[in-house]
Image 1 (cartoon, rainbow, N blue to C red):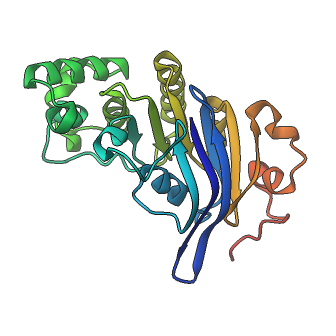
Image 2 (cartoon, one colour):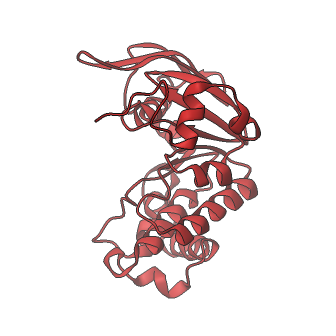
Image 3 (cartoon, rainbow, N blue to C red):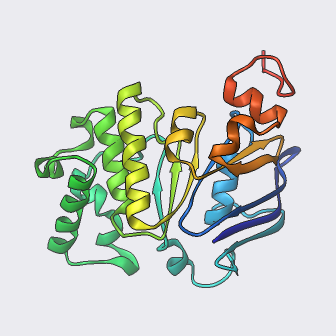
Length: 248
């Protein structure tokens, strides 16, 4: 469904992506792993068209992501942001229904609220949560609201940017299970960026290791522990010694 072919991106002298090749099949969950600053978020931004690659192509269903109707293109995506990215001045239901209250996906206000409440229930939050404000929620609840917003418009593709950052291990496990259930239920294509190996094992169908601007290894999550790739092996086991140099 999504294909990156020889994608390069530099910011001045900093060459972030140096020829990324990656295929994400339809209705599968791809998790991209790699150290901080290896280009995971830049790759995601390139797919969304927020950053333009210097070279290479990115296609969605065979169509170049830089061409065509931009609004129709973005309407196919949902996104769970790393920090939640909720609007403090809006009640929870308006955060969840943000895309349903404006633009090409606009619905009547009452209908948008009903959808928001339904999605909040789907992520384990009571209907009373709808009228609270983000500041009144715990970190785990905020993450669930972000997940409800990501699925509110029934997207075909969902991106998860570090979905368990800042959560305790139990809540991280809950979020991982929710993500897996929802992606499977919706038949969505998912792409997740994470350092959390428990998330990888819970969410992934396939894994890609991004290092030094290229994909070092990609394959089914079932082959990850016995990949034979020294970069992947060092990363997933958290070893200080290996081909990846630790920044000191």
